[in-house]
Length: 360
Image 1 (tube, rainbow, N blue to C red):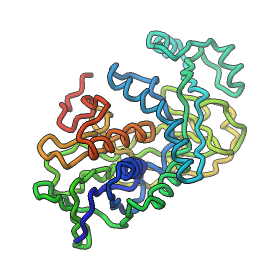
Image 2 (image 1 turned 60 degrees about the vertical axis):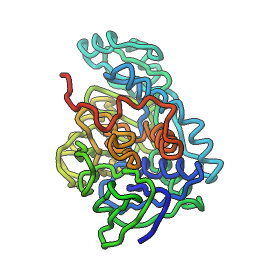
Image 3 (image 1 turned 135 degrees about the vertical axis):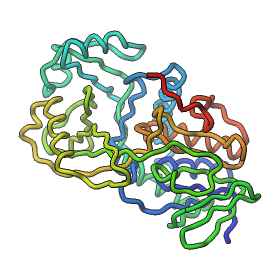
Image 4 (image 1 turned 45 degrees about the vertical axis):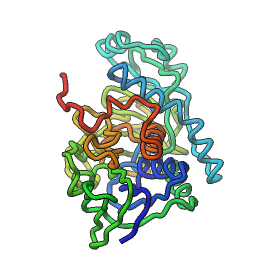
């Protein structure tokens, strides 16, 4: 039996960022996590796209806040670790290949985004596929997710207030005080507070006071050699992201349970998506192929905040496709809630007990 101020369950970007934020409030934290194949954090493309796609005003505002935290978040991380994580804020190009797509994009334009015709699109991206035009989301971009994970890992390893345990949490007893996290080997860890940040594996934890509708959804990615694109490029079926000397393509959404393996079918689909966005990919060599398991909720929004019935149990999970984007904001919220009992952020859209009915 070990006792700490806070147990964080999960060692991905969200769990590590939360642990760091809590420790900087002066509390002793233990991160308990196991190395699960298919974890979303190292597999992510790292896209920061709060102005792309449909969202309510409240959730879009939160996502934009998260994006705009990144420069300061990475600067502080570099000061603590000496590791500089690449951040691209050159904008995202959302491509319209057909008239119907162009009409939809024009109708959804909002502040910070600009319609550009095909001529201007080709000036910005000479390798782009022929189309009707597109939208440039000026403030969006991407962050190098594996580099961010490495920096956060170094951050928590170097913090004397944080311990790391390589174990799997199988159960949580929130009714006791202190709370108890039960480990797969039979050990028990006591803490005044518990933060659940277990990604796609949240549903395997026994004893949580409410069901959390988080399911794994596999996303496969390919990395190609060849000339760099200047922006993140998004189409209706997938996206291209630059990382170092590689171009990444992703976009698959597969309900395959906890199978994090890659498939020939997935590789073929991703190659088609890449060629659809830029014909140059028809002649490029595939450098790598991998997959990750996104922790998806029915409304694609995360579950963040205190349990309504057990105020010392906190959730930071179910981030769906936006775990990288929302990591700095999630860490701020959880750090404030654990240390002070309140947060400066209105987390109503992310409430653990919200309605899961989706309006179609």
